[in-house]
Amino acid sequence: MSTVQQVPITFGLGKHTSVSALLDGTVKPEGIKLTCLTDFPEPSVLVMFDKILKGDLDGGELSMSFFTQNKLGEATLVGIPVFPFRSFRHRSIYIRDEAGIKAPAGLKGKRIGLHAYTASTMTWVRGLLHEEHGLKPQDILWYTFVDKGAEGARRLGASIELMPSPGPGVDLIDLLSKKIEQGELDGGVAPRNITRPGVSRLFPNFPEIEAEYYRRTSIFPTIHTLVVNERIVKQHPWVPRSLFDAFKKAASLTGQYVAGGKLQLWDKETWEVDRPILGGEDPFACGLGPSERRTVEAFLNYLLLDGGIETRPAVDTLFPPL
Image (cartoon, rainbow, N blue to C red; front, top):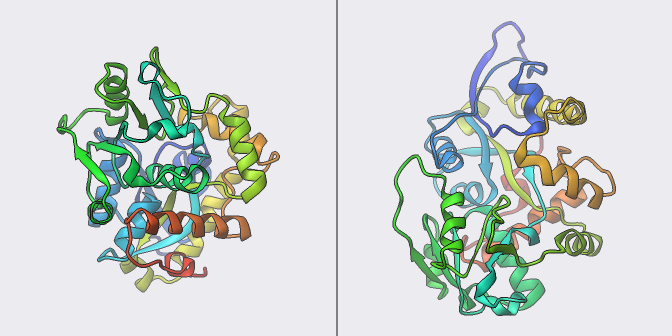
């Protein structure tokens, strides 16, 4: 690896606490001049994903489901086992208080909204509902603003209604919450807290449920992962390792940023709720150990069940050894 000529790489990243040391320059990847872009127009996360998939960015933070689907398609991306966004997903199911839904079985036949049908949180939730509560994706009426990648689910009989796009500049998750509150939907699935008057979590005691789930399965859901464009790896095979080492070092400094009052809102539940469930272990730890491998395997099973993919790739196909 040459440290004289720095390889320029531009990444799209969320403003996660675990990458703060990279964003502010405290940590720098060896041999790489890394530029991190964090501000995108709404719907910001989906815009960032699209730029990564189109090659407008050299890589960055990408949905696990979008990465897997596009890896099996035409995308030339290499996964790096860094997971900037991980969180248990029982908490992600929301209901309108007046919809009469008291338990998972009550979701059957109900109108459940999503910001994007194939987003990773949605895949986890549909997998959990099927495996833990016997509800198939076909049992629920899904309403989504984005149905890209949902063709396989429709072929398997899932009911997916495309809601009118609000256009650029609109926070889809906030809009979803308003539609539930106003009675246009009976509930929804969201990657962040959307409770408000009239909108509650299906599992109000989610920390206890998720703790029991983790004790039983050792699965801590991966929502987003790190990717880099294959063209860069072909030219500089050492780049994934350099990026992994830098992101791992940045993640190890998360506690210092939290202590300094810089815990990002997206990471609040992960740090304050998930970390105790994990027994105090770092929820942003990097690597592909036994627990992470088991987690990715479970996710791939859910994605296959859901029709998001037709064949199940090997974990090492997504994340080649560094």
